[in-house]
Amino acid sequence: MFRRREPVPFAFLAEADRFRSNVTPPPRRRASIGELAGRWLLGLTLVAGLIGALVVGMPALSTPSSTPAQQSQASQGH
Image (cartoon, rainbow, N blue to C red; front, top):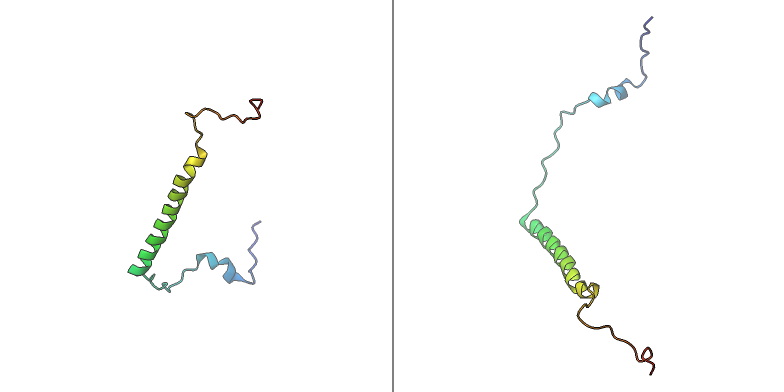
């Protein structure tokens, strides 16, 4: 009724998900103060550039509402 499982030629592959290594990886090297300062400076520069582009581009995106529309001389019949 129940068949025995056939042996797998590569039995170690079937057990690979259960394998635990006893070798611990080396601890991560901490970033130096210069590297941290460089990362902060790069991030600050990127944020300042985006904000500067937004500030410079805002006048081009806004429409003047208080000035009357200019008409050319051709539309006045001159």
